[in-house]
Image (cartoon, rainbow, N blue to C red; front, top):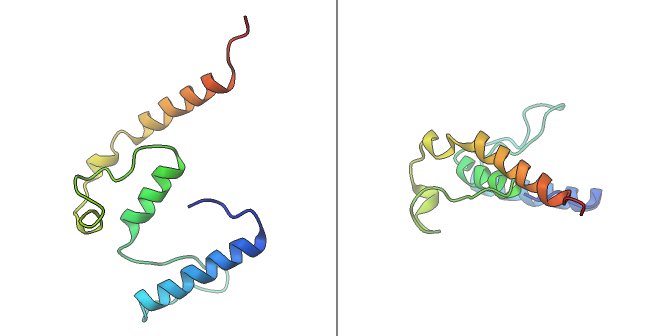
Length: 103
């Protein structure tokens, strides 16, 4: 889930996702109303959560399994129970590497 570098790239990505959504969930609208449009893909939250974890630089695919069985596994909130601490630790590590001590 990387940010597109141009508006055109963002529009292309949105169109690609809308096409996928309409094929996967033909009865689902790709918008809620004129002021809110977003991917409303039910049952894809594990993959979306994985993309978000990857964007944060944190371990993803936290459930045991492989790339075939993982999307079908039941998830527990225990898998992300330490997310706050993980993000805090990563931020501190990133800050340390960004500002090395002067000698």
